[in-house]
Length: 347
Image 1 (cartoon, helix red, strand yellow):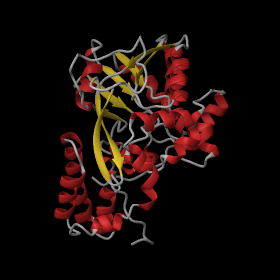
Image 2: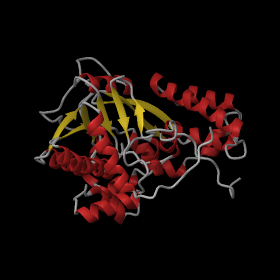
Image 3: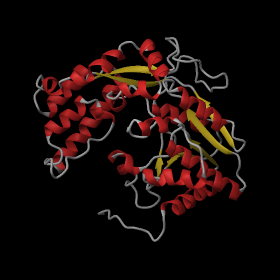
């Protein structure tokens, strides 16, 4: 069935409030996945509105501490944790992640017990089982096991942010914003999927809600407003801006992970075209690049999965997804996200 975009005689705030009330009435437990960022903060305050109305306070929240996050974000999450209407679980679990260094994607583990932690783990943090490194599926199952009954994990995900996030909200006709997770009893719910960034900022201004101060620094520097790992591909390409946001945090990053100094110093000098010339401009060439440049079984599995997605996109619209464009997507370490199509002018 062909999907057609239609506009409702309503607004995004009204619809988001309806969706969150629906979650509280449908699920045994509702928990906001809070990152300290602006989108999950909106969801947290919308959940407060619904919980007050329905007599469901305090609002349950879950914060996964990615370890390599600026002090301003950590401090802000601690402030939110202290709100009297919030009950926040703070998780510090070993999870696989990646470092992007001059076109190569290298694995590392957040909160790896085999190395000195980047910063002290909070005394109240919830830790996993000794010796276990959790993937995303196991993390979902870990969250689901902590409650009895059905669980709604409420995410501050907006379709405007990426093509992949848009597609995740187009898989179903009814309740397209409620999706499956790695645990049968838990659903991932996206009540603000149709919001724009301006909608988010307007809600803060109208409700006079304080947000993480890192956004002030990013706004002054003219950078996108986001809270993300500094080592993943898109963030690693602008590591120099971390020095502007928080010089002390940047210095600690370079001391703990000295190999990232290569990325910081020489990213602008990298000739991706020369690296691409080493491989044939075919899907077999991309596969060989993944074999050579992407390290770690988990990261390679993600890259090969995105390669299959790329083949489908190319078959459907070769002019929008030409091979050279797809190749550069992988060269930039972008295999964690679905490639964006070329614009008509670029085509």
